[in-house]
Amino acid sequence: MIRTRLESIERFAILSASAESLIADIPAFAPHARPATLLRPTASTPGVRDSSIGGPLLWPADEPWPVCRAPHLMEVREKLSDEERETWQRIDSDMEERHRRNPGRGYEVTAEEARIQHQIMAGASMLDKITWERCRWVGDTSGPGVPMVPVVQLYSRNVPGEHWPAGMDVLQVLWCPNDHSELPGQPYYSGPTVELRYRSSSAVETVLNPPRPDRADEGYLPQPCAVDPVEIVDLPERDELPEDLYDEGCRWADARGIEYHRALACRSGWKVGGWPSWHLTDLIPIDCSCGARMRLFLTMESSNDGPDIVVGRFGELRIFTCPTDLSHPIRLNIQ
Ligand SMILES: [Zn+2]
Ligand SMILES: [Zn+2]
Image (cartoon, rainbow, N blue to C red; front, side, top):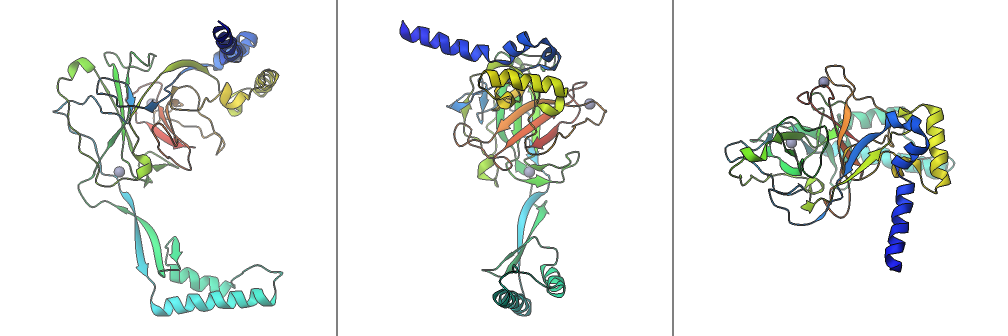
């Protein structure tokens, strides 16, 4: 009895500080609210007929499995010549000697030494001073391509909303578990390539046993999880609101002992819909090639449990879609 009462008090506390209750108190927030579904993944062994993260996909046996043929970043190492190594070591010891004589100054190279070092590096990004190798990243396009891996499968029965094309009830997200940069149509993005598929579950009779990637970054291989979706209302962050309204929202949150950002707005976690957080960069407007401002569709979050993935610097990979036409190319962004 006591337990039930406590639970209902807790539930009331959560409810009283939700985006819905903020909107009830400050109706000017209503036009800025967006529905979202938090997926809340936990480790499990989902099947092809389940919504899942990192689980098996309902995939027609006669449909080719997606393969990534974009250049894969590969580290190439070149040994310095003996002469180059000796020159570099001499510059290092001259620099240390200057520092010893004049500790007030840091370790500095002269303009001439910098020019020589630049020449030795020959455009490489790093020098390994243990093996004396220059390292550079190059795009490797050799080989037959890398089979993509399942990241998300959602059934419309678990994640209802307006984002389902007519007649489709399964959404599948796959990615190539490797880093790529300078992908066509993806400015400022470096990370996995991503494919989205919608299908009708009734049209799939047999299921394919998918090929596995022969090269993969461990952090891009999600562990299988079941999802426990919950519908919420999400609000935008400061840059996407009138200033006065944002201040009013913060005061409302402060009075309830919560943070506006993340508790009411830009909710964290694996999420369908809602608003993106711009906590690493200022707001980057993401526009479709048709000119429409794109909307956040899916957020995939780094974590040490559940799906156990790492994107960016332990950040979030977000997929944006065109509100005018879902068939327009998606945009990717990592924060
Ligand atoms: Zn790839
Ligand atoms: Zn568009």
